[in-house]
Every structure is written in structure tokens, then in C-alpha cells.
Image (cartoon, rainbow, N blue to C red; front, side):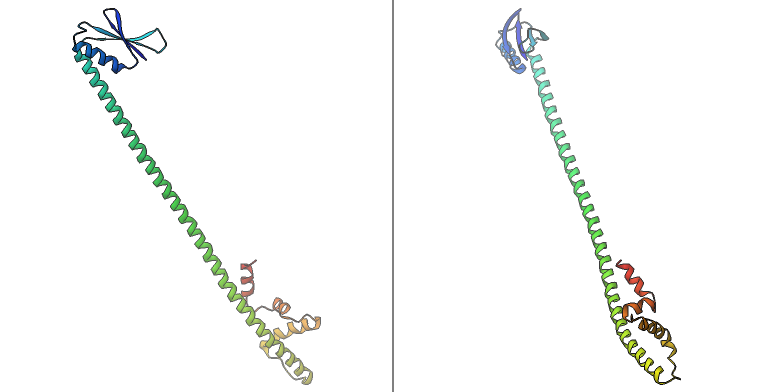
Length: 206
């Protein structure tokens, strides 16, 4: 913007800052170079079109304008400071909320991992029990094989020999497998189950 100072229909000054134009008029009035009304004509830069005309009557008017501009500037500074403060507070709040969300997410991941570890440890313990059971059953099978062989000899040598009732089921299964030449632990256990522990354990690892 360009500010032209008009006094008695004559241009006596040109400024590109409004405050400097006001100061010039004020100094002229103080020194009594200007006693009548003074106009400030506002032009766009590189233009001959006047967009505003302001009449200054005395230095009190100038003082009022200065005070008003000072207040406006102070208010603008205060508004800007308040806006910056609010923006900073909002940013801090957003950052805190984001950190809270991240902490919650990490806590969920931690709980998920702990749950998976617990499940893995549970299955490992079951597997250890399963493995121990298999070893025990293999040992039992070896003892039962010896009994089977002994009972076979007894049957050959003594026609009155009676196989103990608790062993009859095992003996019959072993005898069939022996005839087929397939008498071993794996084939025996497929045909003879004391309980369902085998199946329960196997399902865990299938």
C-alpha cells in the first residue's frame, strides 16, 4: 500500500507505511506546519485508484488511532499467543493419547504372547507325560511278551493249563499278531487300549 498525505489539495508526502504517515502528520501539527484538516489517501501499489480517504483533524485523533492500532496489535499478539498455547496443549494431549494407545497395544501384545507361551508350556508338559506313558507301556509290553511266551510253553506242555483271566485279552491279541508275524508294540497297542489316553495325547500334536 501507498499512503499519500493531502493538505490544502496538495500532496505533501508519500509513505508505504501507515504509521509513518501518521507520525509525519503528528509532527507537522506539533510544529504548527499544519493547522487545517489533513487527508490520507490510500492507493494500491503501482495503481492510481484511491481505495480509501481518511481525514485527520487533530493530534488527538492521531493519538486515538495510534492507541487503537496498539491495542489491536496487542490483542492480535495475545490471540496468537493464546492460539499457540492451545495448539501446543492440544499437541501434547494428542501425543499423550497416542502414547497411551501405544502402551495399551503393547500390553495387549504382551498378554497375547504370555497366553501363547502358557499354552506351549501346557502342551510340553502333556507331551512329557505322554512320552513317560509310552515308555512305561513299552516296558509293560516287554513283560507281557515274556508272559505270552511262558504261557505258550505251558499250553504246549500242559493241556490243563489255564491262562489267567486278566491276561486272556492280551494273549489273544498277541497270538493273532504272532501268527501273522506282526507281533510288536505298535501293532499291539493299535488293537489293545486300556484307556483313551493315547488318543487324547496324540490329538494335541496332530
